[in-house]
Length: 239
Image (cartoon, rainbow, N blue to C red; front, side, top):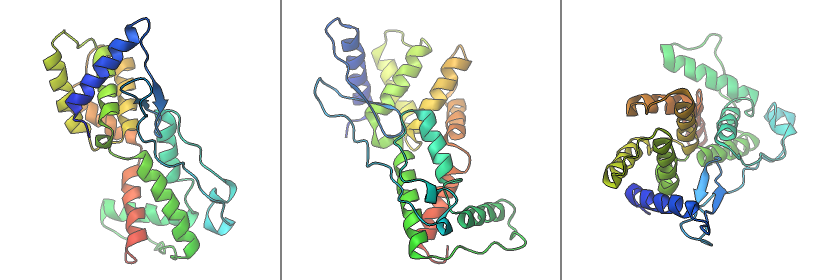
């Protein structure tokens, strides 16, 4: 797997090639809507994961799952963020949605919700439904460290848009390395959304701390916390 510095070098070459009359810059959409960049004409694109599908279930298993045959692969970062929110909200069985809300409230103030919200029964249908949900969430929210070339691309575009390129390649590579290390655990779609906010809302590069705060916001409300609760439900009967 390439390092972020190597990924930046690849990005720089891609940018150079795209500016040449006969240059080729091959792009493809990754599952979360960010661009996958091939390092040479004809080279394979980054792994985009499996298709996101949800089989229909009876009305007993969910408010929306019984109406949806398949979930389309997100084409943009906004679509990925919206789908992540739906997967931990409106696409969940109602009983699970209510139970998760009770668990969140308990974690917030340390008190049980009254009246108590029963834990949904671990039926085969429920487990199958939630397994598909967690699998889809895991693909969308996969840490950016698993796709260093795409992470370097997003950071390179952010720095270019903010006019931080001074001709000092070593300094730029160091910036990508430092920012990339601090952002490696976040989903790419959230990094891309935060970059768009910065480019459209400010005339100078935000601090790394401020950018990370925007990335956390871009991930989506309750997405990661509910994902962990769902994973615990699936793996631990006492969750």
